[in-house]
Image (cartoon, rainbow, N blue to C red; front, side, top):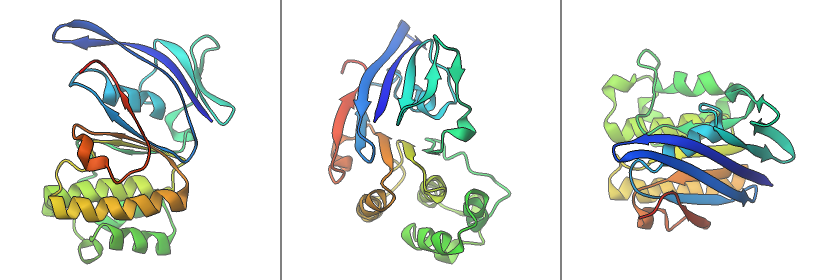
Length: 207
């Protein structure tokens, strides 16, 4: 079980906001996250990943404390085994498509499967500069999956994809998530694009 009970103060244009999430999540589940801009959706993902520290609260994953402000526990991001798809992709400009995946895993068979999944097998030697926005976004998703994460965090992962590519990739991801049995948190501004994922929805902030 994944237990999250955290509070984080946010700076917004309308003054200070407070991100507050208290909930338990079943391992292997998909959680779709919605809410208005500035409500803290991305911050919530980064807190889970260990990139941001909550002001108060705790995160426990399968009985292991990842964060506990009272006990001054804050497990480093490298030890949390999370895959993260950033909204701005965060790709390495000097690495080829294949090198991005090799940076995460030495499993050549898995890399080949991922390249086929993302339809980047014919672009494996290209660097991000020579990829379209949609191709860069697909690479970001593949890189996050490469480590076969226990928890996958996705921040607007399909925003640059056309409808056909988005539908095809989501269908493949549904099966991948089942195969890896990873727990998935997806932030999206579009409720309907995530309908193919079985799981619950949570809203951060009031709409």
